[in-house]
Length: 234
Image (cartoon, rainbow, N blue to C red; front, side, top):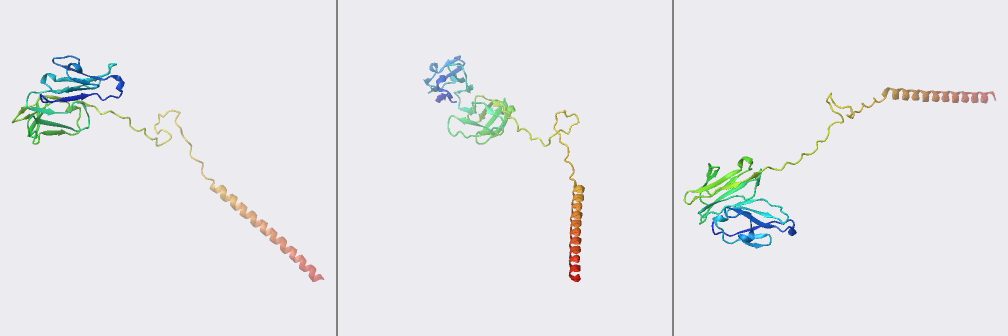
């Protein structure tokens, strides 16, 4: 931040009864509460005019001693600053750094450095790092030839949380490995359909029906012949 800027810090409370307060540590103060260096209002703290001696680490702390993320604030009396994320950046996200001057215009060409080595020069004064990884963590600064160099800013990169993958669906009921345990579930192949037995049964039934039909036909013919003989005798 530039000297003379105003800053408002606040704790995002999940539990308003926890009594969250702002604290800081600087080169001049160690573990100092907001009322010693700013205007306190509940879980917020305002610095109306910030000085380089206000550079340091700031955090929220509850009445029970729980703490929030720590952020770094750097204040310069110079004319160039590097605006960068104050909170850790998660792997895979994009980060944009802005090299700004105290006077307008603030979109001048700027050279960006990481750990003292030049990354590249951007014509509009801002640089985007796509899909950051842990290797992008480090100390960054920028330089505008007409105005000077910014104070360094540290960027922290956190690892992306791993989520358990879906449980694979089994494709068979037993393992194909010869060393499978005896508890593997196996099923014998279904018995073959008795085609020949069915054919023999059907054929036997057909023959039986034909025999019954023939016997019945013979009996009817014999009975008819006897009737005709009786008529002729008369």
